[in-house]
Length: 109
Image (cartoon, rainbow, N blue to C red; front, side, top):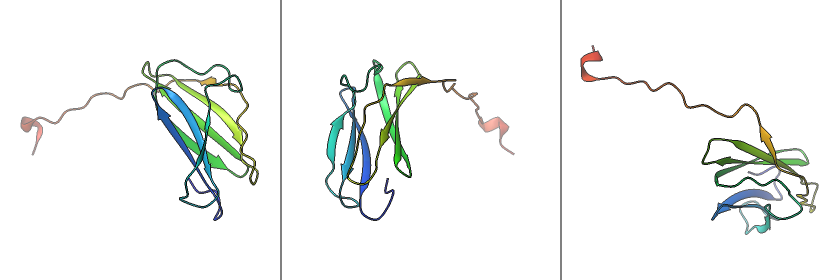
């Protein structure tokens, strides 16, 4: 995600640990921050997927757990500042699986 032409932000999940990354150039090597420490209380167990969204000087990282629950934390991205010091909160409602649809051969025209 490139909020402007002088930096880029990334999110990564490895072994259940969430990281936020900031690179000082678009596509550059990020400096990673662990988002599962005491600065970000409430990190959920069994996280299996991650995303990042930025808008202006704000960024949000969301993780999805294997149980289907989504949690989010917020970070400040003002210039060289990249501060993640807010708790994780559960987003409601959780996503629900869509209705399974099937087209069998007999359903084709």
